[in-house]
Image (cartoon, rainbow, N blue to C red; front, side, top):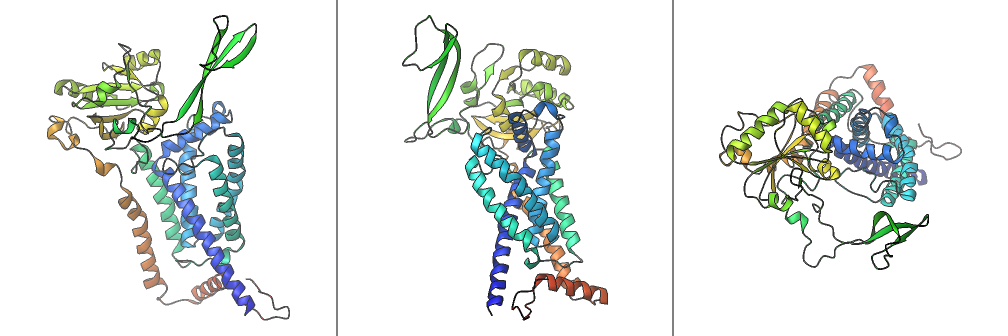
Length: 453
């Protein structure tokens, strides 16, 4: 009786650990798959923090981004379904053995502020991430050691279909979102957001308090000063640093700005308050931008001139890079400067096109999916493109159904055709072996111990 109770407790604990792991891995892999460029940027942050960015080829971060999302989601899916248990538990345990020391290093030395394990969907501090990984490491150890008590949803004859579909699904989703745009937008610059609302501090909210530190030098000695004790002119200015004194409410879109390159004027408020449509061709770096569809960009600029709309190319590139871009593409549209991190966050395409009006984002397009002359046949006020494309902003239900519905069909095929069909001796032997793995048998031997398969 005591052994029976121990066995039941172990089954419950291991399967609880298995579902905790599966949930974390599926969610982590999914948010990476829907935003592969965001994961690419985070990998580049890691490489820069460890001074490795110059040692790897340029395509390395995006390849690792896609592969990482596929590995995490697949391991989570296999754990959830209880199939390929050896591969899934080995993979989860090895990943946690690798990631836990890394997140401890991040927590201790803080080379980057956010590990990026859950993308932009959930932001955790480095210490929160470390303790989360401790829990997952413990869970992965138990599932790895006692994987044979994990119950499965599919028989041996159909588990290959479920596992293969899981891999194909997450790989296809990642490539689709890379070619177009994320099907679910977790970032503050999503379609329908109002820039002006996202740039103000709500009434009653306390803003963050910063202090500016000035580094000055005199007689070869450098010292730090604040505004209150700023010295006389005998000191030479070296640099200034901004230090966070007290964390407060920070508007999510406060860093967005546009500075007209030709005039040097800040045109942010003018653009965000304009009741006329504005096209923004966003490229955080023009020297890395894809110019394969530049003819369509030039056509959209011509269309905006004909209809009386605004058009700006928004970039953080230097003036000489802008000149190279204009010479290469024949661009005649005006340019404005913006922060590179903001532009990366604004749209996951380089370049990408954003349509705004009255400070509201109406639509966004990847450079692979730009509207053409057939889409822009008349003024935007008369076209569906001139309406806020909320349906493009969140496609969670259709994306998730695309995964679970085929798995449900495989499951129905399994229980109606495989489990109830005629069984050969080989099938019976396989199923018997599977039953033995799923249900440990208590053997009342001389030692009175639990004999595991």
